[in-house]
Length: 344
Image 1 (spheres, rainbow, N blue to C red):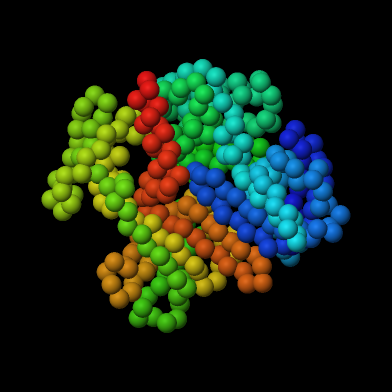
Image 2: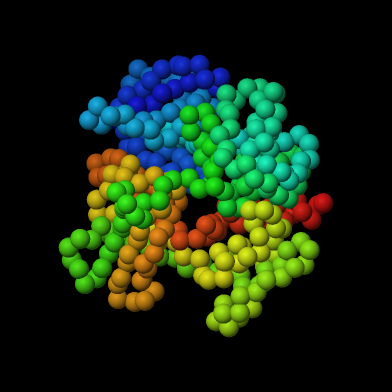
């Protein structure tokens, strides 16, 4: 059973709705998570005042007397046909609408910068969000122009190999979110071996190699350069340019991109949505007919998708590298950022 706790934009409780139908959720690391559900049109809570945008919604699942958090965010869209469908997007969406009103540069402790930014936003109108950041070292990022959003800042921080999420009215920023589950009592493995019918935990998988992030020659803003001879010999010379910082050096950037980036999407044979959490480091072993389909390494859980309806389906996206393959929204964001730099 699912429960939706509803609040107004100022976190005043409105009601709770029990019995959400056709619930689906896509939970992502360093990106916008979302969920959809339906309620019957004759439900007593099927009112505009309950679900109007941008009311706050927190969704949990109650099973065997245990209530477990899934997602919280804003009421983003309402569709009305035979039933009422609600789309919830996490607080990344809210902070896309919180703007930076002066040019700022990040060149110092990340935790202090984020706390000051949140104080400034809350001074205009309280969001009731605070910052929980364990990154205290100096971080240097490109200047943010007036009119950028808090979300733009968070995406830059994610690009610099930090991880963040929103939970319990906190912006949580860490070097890494999740637990290392590659050893010890919490060990977790996804596996598929063509030679072993028993013991498989993967029903199907999709492995993606992507050229977009491949680079074996990297320049920085001072025209220092670092090359990887082995990758050049194998792939030819593929160049890139970055602004270095304490968190993003030429060597760390090159290490993540000198080989082809690979992501794995799997549909487990049987998994509870709560078995693994975003950011968890788990083992993955896949061996099929082709060497293209071979993988044996530790991977990070970067996305979880679940559909609870007549047939429950859970999918998990795993990534070996801290960089992510680019989808159309990433590409648009990069183009917009390059345009802003040209405008400077």
